[in-house]
Length: 292
Image (cartoon, rainbow, N blue to C red; front, side):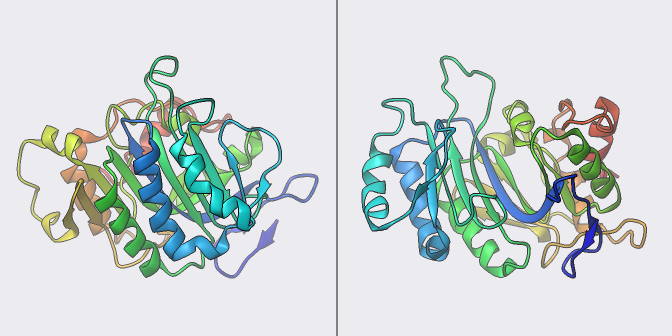
Protein backbone atom coordinates (compact mmCIF):
# COMPACT_ATOMS: atom_id res chain seq x y z
CA UNK A 1 0.00 0.00 0.00
CA UNK A 2 0.98 3.62 -0.51
CA UNK A 3 -0.17 6.71 1.33
CA UNK A 4 -0.73 9.95 -0.55
CA UNK A 5 -1.01 13.31 1.22
CA UNK A 6 -4.26 14.37 -0.44
CA UNK A 7 -6.26 11.33 0.71
CA UNK A 8 -6.81 10.12 4.29
CA UNK A 9 -6.40 6.43 3.49
CA UNK A 10 -3.78 4.15 1.92
CA UNK A 11 -4.18 3.05 -1.69
CA UNK A 12 -3.61 -0.71 -2.10
CA UNK A 13 -1.78 -2.08 -5.13
CA UNK A 14 -1.90 -5.36 -7.01
CA UNK A 15 0.99 -7.73 -7.65
CA UNK A 16 2.12 -5.59 -10.60
CA UNK A 17 2.26 -2.46 -8.47
CA UNK A 18 -0.85 -0.90 -10.04
CA UNK A 19 -3.34 0.91 -7.82
CA UNK A 20 -6.47 -1.13 -7.11
CA UNK A 21 -8.51 2.06 -7.18
CA UNK A 22 -8.12 5.75 -7.96
CA UNK A 23 -9.65 8.46 -5.76
CA UNK A 24 -10.87 11.18 -8.13
CA UNK A 25 -13.37 13.99 -8.53
CA UNK A 26 -16.19 13.19 -10.88
CA UNK A 27 -19.51 14.33 -12.29
CA UNK A 28 -22.05 12.16 -14.09
CA UNK A 29 -25.33 13.29 -15.62
CA UNK A 30 -27.71 10.45 -16.51
CA UNK A 31 -30.12 10.98 -19.39
CA UNK A 32 -33.14 9.26 -20.89
CA UNK A 33 -31.89 10.02 -24.40
CA UNK A 34 -28.76 9.14 -26.33
CA UNK A 35 -26.79 12.39 -26.73
CA UNK A 36 -27.01 13.46 -30.35
CA UNK A 37 -24.93 15.96 -32.30
CA UNK A 38 -26.39 19.16 -30.80
CA UNK A 39 -26.35 18.19 -27.14
CA UNK A 40 -22.98 16.48 -27.41
CA UNK A 41 -21.60 19.63 -29.05
CA UNK A 42 -22.98 21.82 -26.25
CA UNK A 43 -21.31 19.66 -23.61
CA UNK A 44 -18.05 19.51 -25.56
CA UNK A 45 -17.93 23.28 -26.06
CA UNK A 46 -18.43 23.88 -22.32
CA UNK A 47 -15.75 21.35 -21.43
CA UNK A 48 -13.36 22.66 -24.06
CA UNK A 49 -13.55 26.22 -22.73
CA UNK A 50 -12.50 25.21 -19.21
CA UNK A 51 -10.53 21.99 -19.61
CA UNK A 52 -9.73 21.64 -23.32
CA UNK A 53 -6.05 22.31 -22.71
CA UNK A 54 -5.77 18.97 -20.92
CA UNK A 55 -7.02 16.84 -23.83
CA UNK A 56 -4.24 14.65 -25.27
CA UNK A 57 -6.11 11.69 -26.76
CA UNK A 58 -9.58 10.59 -27.83
CA UNK A 59 -11.53 7.61 -29.10
CA UNK A 60 -15.10 6.60 -29.94
CA UNK A 61 -16.74 4.57 -27.18
CA UNK A 62 -17.27 1.85 -29.81
CA UNK A 63 -13.50 1.52 -30.35
CA UNK A 64 -11.69 -0.93 -28.07
CA UNK A 65 -8.19 -0.27 -29.40
CA UNK A 66 -5.62 2.35 -28.36
CA UNK A 67 -6.68 5.99 -28.19
CA UNK A 68 -5.89 8.41 -31.00
CA UNK A 69 -3.72 11.48 -30.61
CA UNK A 70 -5.57 14.77 -30.08
CA UNK A 71 -3.55 16.86 -32.50
CA UNK A 72 -4.57 19.93 -34.51
CA UNK A 73 -6.19 17.80 -37.19
CA UNK A 74 -8.19 15.77 -34.66
CA UNK A 75 -9.36 18.89 -32.85
CA UNK A 76 -10.33 20.62 -36.08
CA UNK A 77 -12.22 17.58 -37.31
CA UNK A 78 -14.04 16.76 -34.08
CA UNK A 79 -17.16 18.90 -34.77
CA UNK A 80 -17.64 16.95 -37.99
CA UNK A 81 -17.37 13.68 -36.05
CA UNK A 82 -20.02 14.88 -33.60
CA UNK A 83 -22.30 15.78 -36.50
CA UNK A 84 -22.22 12.12 -37.60
CA UNK A 85 -23.22 10.67 -34.21
CA UNK A 86 -25.71 7.80 -34.33
CA UNK A 87 -25.46 7.51 -38.13
CA UNK A 88 -23.08 4.56 -37.81
CA UNK A 89 -21.39 2.65 -35.00
CA UNK A 90 -20.34 5.72 -32.99
CA UNK A 91 -22.73 6.72 -30.21
CA UNK A 92 -20.21 8.42 -27.95
CA UNK A 93 -16.63 9.61 -27.44
CA UNK A 94 -14.03 9.75 -24.69
CA UNK A 95 -11.42 12.51 -24.47
CA UNK A 96 -8.63 12.37 -21.90
CA UNK A 97 -5.19 13.61 -20.95
CA UNK A 98 -3.90 10.19 -19.89
CA UNK A 99 -4.82 6.80 -21.40
CA UNK A 100 -4.13 5.23 -17.98
CA UNK A 101 -7.28 6.93 -16.62
CA UNK A 102 -5.43 8.84 -13.91
CA UNK A 103 -6.31 12.40 -14.90
CA UNK A 104 -8.94 14.37 -16.81
CA UNK A 105 -11.73 12.63 -18.70
CA UNK A 106 -14.80 13.70 -20.66
CA UNK A 107 -16.96 10.88 -21.96
CA UNK A 108 -20.48 10.72 -23.26
CA UNK A 109 -22.25 7.61 -24.45
CA UNK A 110 -25.69 6.85 -25.79
CA UNK A 111 -27.27 3.41 -25.53
CA UNK A 112 -29.17 2.36 -28.63
CA UNK A 113 -32.92 2.49 -27.87
CA UNK A 114 -33.75 -0.45 -30.13
CA UNK A 115 -31.16 -2.92 -28.83
CA UNK A 116 -29.97 -1.61 -25.43
CA UNK A 117 -33.20 -0.83 -23.64
CA UNK A 118 -33.43 -0.06 -19.92
CA UNK A 119 -30.12 1.78 -19.67
CA UNK A 120 -29.56 5.47 -18.94
CA UNK A 121 -27.14 7.21 -21.28
CA UNK A 122 -24.70 9.67 -19.72
CA UNK A 123 -22.31 12.57 -19.77
CA UNK A 124 -19.31 11.70 -17.58
CA UNK A 125 -16.41 13.81 -16.36
CA UNK A 126 -13.41 13.06 -14.15
CA UNK A 127 -10.69 15.27 -12.69
CA UNK A 128 -7.62 14.77 -10.50
CA UNK A 129 -8.74 15.07 -6.88
CA UNK A 130 -6.69 18.26 -6.36
CA UNK A 131 -8.76 20.17 -8.97
CA UNK A 132 -10.39 23.40 -7.72
CA UNK A 133 -13.93 22.48 -6.58
CA UNK A 134 -15.14 25.97 -7.47
CA UNK A 135 -14.12 25.41 -11.08
CA UNK A 136 -15.90 22.06 -11.15
CA UNK A 137 -19.04 23.55 -9.59
CA UNK A 138 -19.14 26.34 -12.17
CA UNK A 139 -18.81 23.79 -14.94
CA UNK A 140 -21.52 21.50 -13.53
CA UNK A 141 -23.97 24.39 -13.13
CA UNK A 142 -23.32 25.53 -16.71
CA UNK A 143 -23.79 21.96 -17.95
CA UNK A 144 -27.10 21.66 -16.08
CA UNK A 145 -28.26 24.78 -17.90
CA UNK A 146 -27.24 23.37 -21.28
CA UNK A 147 -28.40 19.75 -21.52
CA UNK A 148 -31.47 17.97 -20.08
CA UNK A 149 -30.81 15.24 -17.51
CA UNK A 150 -32.62 12.77 -15.27
CA UNK A 151 -30.25 12.97 -12.33
CA UNK A 152 -26.57 13.27 -11.53
CA UNK A 153 -23.90 13.59 -8.89
CA UNK A 154 -20.58 15.38 -8.47
CA UNK A 155 -17.95 14.79 -5.80
CA UNK A 156 -15.28 12.31 -4.77
CA UNK A 157 -15.40 8.80 -6.21
CA UNK A 158 -13.44 5.63 -5.56
CA UNK A 159 -12.83 4.27 -9.04
CA UNK A 160 -11.81 0.60 -8.92
CA UNK A 161 -9.56 -1.14 -11.38
CA UNK A 162 -11.99 -2.72 -13.82
CA UNK A 163 -12.74 -6.44 -13.66
CA UNK A 164 -10.58 -6.91 -10.55
CA UNK A 165 -12.59 -8.38 -7.62
CA UNK A 166 -9.99 -7.27 -5.07
CA UNK A 167 -10.40 -3.70 -6.32
CA UNK A 168 -14.13 -3.71 -5.62
CA UNK A 169 -13.54 -5.17 -2.17
CA UNK A 170 -10.99 -2.42 -1.49
CA UNK A 171 -13.54 0.16 -2.68
CA UNK A 172 -16.05 -1.37 -0.27
CA UNK A 173 -13.78 -0.79 2.71
CA UNK A 174 -13.21 2.86 1.79
CA UNK A 175 -16.83 3.66 0.92
CA UNK A 176 -18.12 2.10 4.14
CA UNK A 177 -15.94 4.39 6.24
CA UNK A 178 -15.62 7.52 4.10
CA UNK A 179 -19.19 8.46 3.28
CA UNK A 180 -18.18 11.32 0.99
CA UNK A 181 -16.53 8.87 -1.43
CA UNK A 182 -19.00 7.51 -3.96
CA UNK A 183 -18.77 3.83 -4.81
CA UNK A 184 -18.36 3.38 -8.55
CA UNK A 185 -19.36 0.99 -11.27
CA UNK A 186 -20.99 2.96 -14.06
CA UNK A 187 -21.73 -0.15 -16.12
CA UNK A 188 -23.99 -1.33 -13.28
CA UNK A 189 -25.49 2.01 -12.25
CA UNK A 190 -26.79 2.88 -15.74
CA UNK A 191 -29.13 -0.11 -15.45
CA UNK A 192 -31.07 1.67 -12.68
CA UNK A 193 -30.97 5.40 -13.37
CA UNK A 194 -34.15 5.44 -15.48
CA UNK A 195 -36.04 4.49 -12.30
CA UNK A 196 -34.65 7.09 -9.88
CA UNK A 197 -31.52 8.76 -8.56
CA UNK A 198 -28.54 7.02 -6.98
CA UNK A 199 -27.68 8.76 -3.68
CA UNK A 200 -26.67 12.17 -2.26
CA UNK A 201 -23.23 13.54 -3.03
CA UNK A 202 -21.47 16.91 -2.72
CA UNK A 203 -23.63 18.08 -5.66
CA UNK A 204 -26.82 16.16 -6.41
CA UNK A 205 -28.74 16.98 -9.57
CA UNK A 206 -32.39 16.11 -10.12
CA UNK A 207 -33.98 16.74 -13.51
CA UNK A 208 -37.47 18.04 -14.19
CA UNK A 209 -38.91 14.61 -14.99
CA UNK A 210 -37.99 13.28 -11.54
CA UNK A 211 -38.90 16.50 -9.73
CA UNK A 212 -42.48 16.16 -10.97
CA UNK A 213 -42.68 12.88 -9.07
CA UNK A 214 -42.03 14.64 -5.76
CA UNK A 215 -45.32 16.49 -5.95
CA UNK A 216 -44.70 18.36 -2.71
CA UNK A 217 -42.59 21.09 -1.15
CA UNK A 218 -39.11 20.29 0.05
CA UNK A 219 -38.74 19.60 3.79
CA UNK A 220 -37.24 22.30 5.99
CA UNK A 221 -33.45 22.28 5.70
CA UNK A 222 -33.40 21.35 2.02
CA UNK A 223 -34.55 24.68 0.54
CA UNK A 224 -31.30 26.45 1.38
CA UNK A 225 -29.31 23.70 -0.35
CA UNK A 226 -31.23 23.88 -3.63
CA UNK A 227 -30.73 26.09 -6.66
CA UNK A 228 -32.85 25.90 -9.81
CA UNK A 229 -31.40 25.53 -13.28
CA UNK A 230 -32.79 25.27 -16.78
CA UNK A 231 -33.34 21.53 -16.63
CA UNK A 232 -33.87 20.80 -12.92
CA UNK A 233 -32.43 21.51 -9.49
CA UNK A 234 -28.92 21.25 -8.05
CA UNK A 235 -28.52 20.45 -4.35
CA UNK A 236 -25.23 21.40 -2.69
CA UNK A 237 -24.57 19.51 0.53
CA UNK A 238 -21.51 21.49 1.65
CA UNK A 239 -19.13 24.18 0.33
CA UNK A 240 -16.63 21.67 -1.11
CA UNK A 241 -16.37 17.89 -1.41
CA UNK A 242 -15.06 16.07 1.65
CA UNK A 243 -14.19 12.44 2.33
CA UNK A 244 -16.42 12.39 5.46
CA UNK A 245 -14.88 9.82 7.79
CA UNK A 246 -17.94 8.76 9.74
CA UNK A 247 -15.72 7.20 12.41
CA UNK A 248 -14.69 10.74 13.33
CA UNK A 249 -17.72 12.89 12.52
CA UNK A 250 -21.48 12.74 12.16
CA UNK A 251 -21.78 16.23 10.67
CA UNK A 252 -23.82 15.18 7.66
CA UNK A 253 -26.63 17.72 7.95
CA UNK A 254 -26.56 18.68 4.26
CA UNK A 255 -26.45 15.13 2.95
CA UNK A 256 -29.16 14.01 5.37
CA UNK A 257 -31.43 16.91 4.41
CA UNK A 258 -31.01 16.00 0.74
CA UNK A 259 -31.59 12.30 1.44
CA UNK A 260 -34.82 13.13 3.29
CA UNK A 261 -36.03 15.54 0.61
CA UNK A 262 -35.35 13.13 -2.25
CA UNK A 263 -36.19 9.81 -0.57
CA UNK A 264 -39.20 9.14 -2.86
CA UNK A 265 -36.89 9.44 -5.87
CA UNK A 266 -34.09 7.14 -4.75
CA UNK A 267 -33.78 3.79 -6.48
CA UNK A 268 -35.19 0.88 -4.51
CA UNK A 269 -32.98 -1.63 -6.27
CA UNK A 270 -29.36 -1.45 -7.44
CA UNK A 271 -27.26 -4.43 -8.42
CA UNK A 272 -24.04 -4.98 -6.43
CA UNK A 273 -21.07 -2.94 -7.65
CA UNK A 274 -18.86 -6.03 -7.96
CA UNK A 275 -16.63 -8.25 -5.82
CA UNK A 276 -17.66 -10.51 -2.93
CA UNK A 277 -18.08 -7.72 -0.33
CA UNK A 278 -20.79 -5.86 -2.24
CA UNK A 279 -23.75 -8.10 -1.50
CA UNK A 280 -27.23 -6.87 -2.51
CA UNK A 281 -27.91 -5.94 1.12
CA UNK A 282 -24.59 -4.13 1.58
CA UNK A 283 -25.11 -2.21 -1.66
CA UNK A 284 -28.54 -0.86 -0.69
CA UNK A 285 -27.37 -0.12 2.86
CA UNK A 286 -24.54 1.99 1.47
CA UNK A 287 -26.80 3.84 -0.97
CA UNK A 288 -29.06 4.75 1.98
CA UNK A 289 -26.22 5.70 4.36
CA UNK A 290 -27.54 9.26 4.79
CA UNK A 291 -31.16 8.27 5.28
CA UNK A 292 -32.68 9.69 8.47
